[in-house]
Image 1: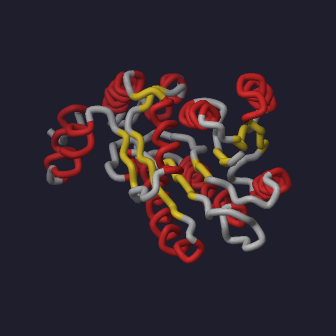
Image 2 (image 1 turned 120 degrees about the horizontal axis):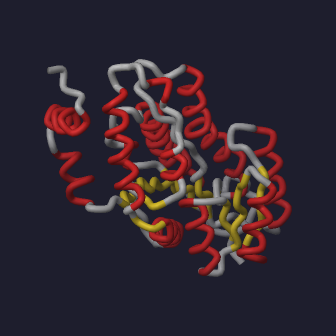
Length: 283
């Protein structure tokens, strides 16, 4: 049985990947942070799932998880590593605390490299392992290419992930390990419930207060009506198995308007559209 490591499988895109990949006969080593999530998913997915208790920012726990996987895959390369774990911390950069900014980068960018380095030997850099080299799938975002206001830190982490994915793909070519980016737009995940409960009171006395609320209302509406997580799971399966994958796969609802046009329009035009929508005009 082929195996894949997926980070952040307790909910959302990670859970969608777990559901789809397990249905294809793949064994998933999935990272969780809570024991109750490990127990719940083990009950739900049975022998198709092995929980890995780790924090992507903690090199020790990630290294221990990699050793656990090494012991169980019997000298065969992993089919793939899906770097999915991440968080979103919103706020205007003018006022956002450096601690929050640093945490955003640490989890969404530094953590992805920590995990990648730990599992590379099991993907093909260790010549004692057998089989075809595995693939690395990095879950970026539409925000990795198009940056909205009030998500500057999150977009910075995803733009950075796009950059290290490009570098890794070119560096790891010598081992035959491919690196592919998936860039979701609005996906219906529990992250929107978390976003609705986020405390933005620290910004209520700033000039951005009304605009932040407009942005949050818009994002919640779009997010909750987005693609189901299983759609991303199916794309992950395709990306792991197709003979000649692209280097990047956007999966964006209303693709032409929200992706194609948004990237073709001059940036000043996009600036003005966003300013009118959110009340960010100077006048």
